[in-house]
Length: 214
Ligand SMILES: Cc1cc2nc3c(=O)[nH]c(=O)nc-3n(C[C@H](O)[C@H](O)[C@H](O)COP(=O)(O)O)c2cc1C
Image (cartoon, rainbow, N blue to C red; front, side):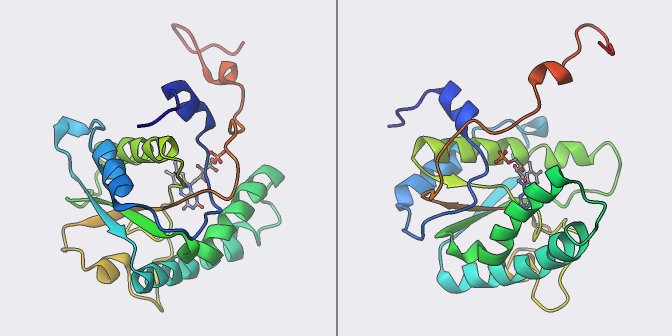
């Protein structure tokens, strides 16, 4: 059973982008999905499904798709823009590791919405907001099993720069037309170390009773 505290899991789980190729036991993958489904969802509709991809050919197809989108969006747009500031450049330079090496992860879990998100302001939050808590549960559960990963939206059905050369994620995974991929989560044993992620001081984003400038 997990031997880290909730506190440790929350305060040390960061985007683990460099993963070993060692396989992950199926029982651990089942635990991650079960943990994901403990998350809340809008109306408790549980409008999620998870495609757990371990097959090398399937991982390669997803990696090719993600590389095509990531090269356009991150490499050729964000990183090519001289206006991109250093902090953003650092984060996206890290993300390029996944753009170039997504298939090094032994598992890619694709978190899906089982109903397409309507293009209606005010409703989208309930749809996407029903997937991301589950994804974070999954990542915390992974952390408790010594596994790492990162949530990636590029390559999903809601990404910018949908592919021209490669099949979309729905085609690769044979998703029914109503099922839409929201996030790709590569999972594996970390090459990096766990550490408190860098965040702005929490005191700078909290306001008590009403918004104040101090
Ligand atoms: C909604 C969402 C979308 C994200 N999409 C991507 C993505 O497309 N590609 C990527 O490499 N990382 C993506 N990330 C990961 C973030 O870049 C990462 O969580 C952030 O930089 C903090 O990393 P840290 O916890 O290591 O500090 C996404 C994270 C969230 C929450």
